[in-house]
Image 1 (cartoon, rainbow, N blue to C red):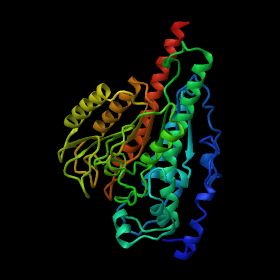
Image 2 (image 1 turned 45 degrees about the vertical axis):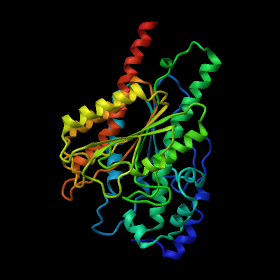
Image 3 (image 1 turned 30 degrees about the horizontal axis):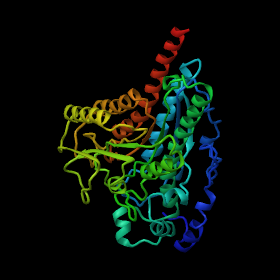
Image 4 (image 1 turned 90 degrees about the horizontal axis):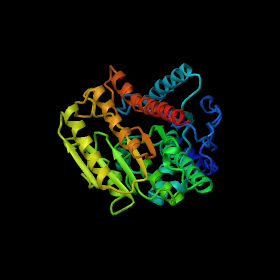
Length: 402
């Protein structure tokens, strides 16, 4: 149900981007949800170099009321975030002191300057004003509304904020190394990851959207950090493990030497033209755990050996590869998806690579949402536990060295 008449919404949306300016800190942004209870916690001191840093952004406060019977699972974002947040709180209560600096933050709305790093200004303007054709709306899959605009902007803005938060820490570590001693190596600092319980909108192109994707959050975030943090972020890898090809990102980064696109997807689940990523690997309909994991392990090893100079990784963690996914056409188990996640985390950890995790596809059946919700939540829970385990090992090593 649309909250305002179309003309009223168009007038109101023209001021949206003016109200979403952020300061240099990714935790200090202003939007109309700044007083939401979930963002009142004090942000962690990310300049404390003794612990891993893992901020988690979420945008379920921008939930859109879709028409009855719509097939997009809008409610899953809130449900997944609640599962993840509850787990983190329980785990931290078990420890005398938290081993990880983490914070749940409402996703800021992407700014105009951020969006135009990747998308056509005309396309952005038309979307913000609701000036789209029936065909365009049908391709995207959402009716236009002011709530939908905010959600699309936050879906992108949260991933940008997550990436910038990591880069701010990396920049601080880099400055410390230069100021204190050239003998300080990277192992002196814990690795830094972040996450967005949204995003992964990899079907958006320069001047159009499709498949529930309006803007490409990962592409915008990648372009923003290349521009803003170019002194430390020179080459970015996108690992896209959704059941569908990351077709939008493939086109957006064609002929870009500084952005590597890797898409592992189902060969029988294209809903539009197949595009060309830097590395496209197709798996058969009905693919099971063993085939999937052997394939992913092989290609991650190849990337590690051949793609020199990667500074940053985005992980599009769609879970529509599950057998129980309504639209996926693959047959992985919940355990198989968890093993997939670990392969990505191992890949990043072994090379001490900064990482941003986003959501992706995951379509529950009408009568049982549990498998999809658990699989999405496990992506973030595993990352937290992985960092926690790394920190325990790091503390033991530091203790032994003294």
